[in-house]
Amino acid sequence: MHFGSFVFSISTDPEKDHEVVDRTLQEVELAEQAGFDAVWLTEHHFDGAVAYADPVVFRTAVAMSTQRMRIGFAVLEMALYHPVRLAVQTALLDHLSKGRLIVGTGRGSAYNEYEYIGFGITLDQGRDMLTEAEELLIKAWKGKNVDHKGRYWHSKFPELRPRPYKNPTLPCCGPA
Image (cartoon, rainbow, N blue to C red; front, side, top):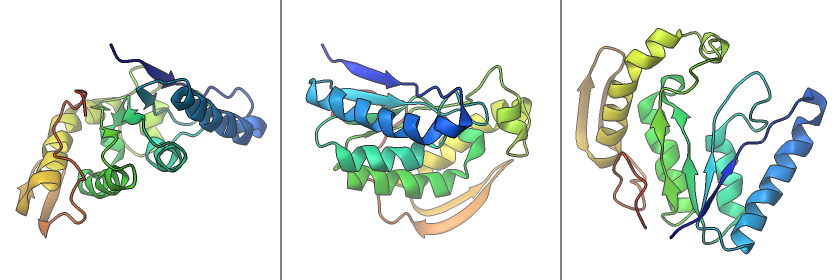
C-alpha cells in the first residue's frame, strides 16, 4: 500500500499568501519525513484556493527540498498551457527530481469560470482543448521530428531537449 498527501494550500487573505506557501512547503517536507510515498499538487487561480497557484513552479521547490517522494500534479489545467512548453517544463522537472514526477492532466476547474476567463479562454474551450493538448504533450515527450497540426496548436520541431528522465505515459500514476 502506498500513501500520499494531497496538498491544498487555501489562503483566505491575500496578505498571507506568502506564509501559506512557506507552510505548504514545510508540510511537504514533513510528509516525506513521515514516510509518505507521494505528494499531490493542485492548481487553482485568482481565489486563494491554492496559494502557490502555479504547481509547475511550486513543484520545482518541492523537488529541491525532498529526496524520495514522488511528486504529482492533481491536475494541471491543460488549456492554460502550451503543450510543448509544458513538455519542456515537465521534462526538466523530471530530471531535477531524478524521475519522481507524476503528471496528472485534466480540464481543471468545473466551477470557477474566471480561472479560464483570466487566461483568455472559456470553460467550453478548455474542455475542447484537453484531448489535443494531451496528445501533443506525449508527442513532444516521446517524438522525433514532431509535426503536429491540430485545431488549437501547430508545432514542428526535431525533438524535445531535455527528454524526460523516465519514459512518460498518460495516465501516469503507477509505481516508479
